[in-house]
Image (tube, rainbow, N blue to C red; front, side):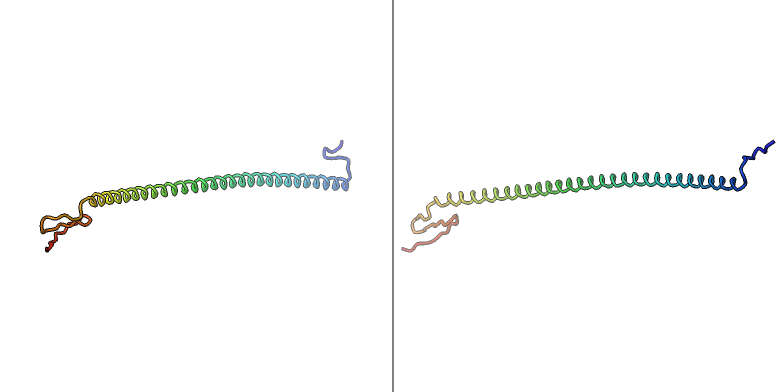
Length: 137
């Protein structure tokens, strides 16, 4: 009867076969580790790609925010300028109205005779200011 563990190989053949199995196991483990490393590398690349994509989206969003803020600032600046211009226009209109009123008042006063006589007393009117003077004859 043969032993259950007996393969019919010589001890040298058994050693050689064992070494070969051991090398295959090592190569298999090595390939397994290499594949895991490659998988990890791919996952890292995917993660980095997503991270870069997210960073790009943030940059684009920030750029849009800056553009919007710039437009808003320019718009507010235009509104301030328009307000200042309208205020100046109002002031100019008020000044022009005052000038016209003064001119109209001066024109009305120019129609009053500048000199008229009340006997020996003469009343002279010069631009709205009356003076009383005596004439000696």
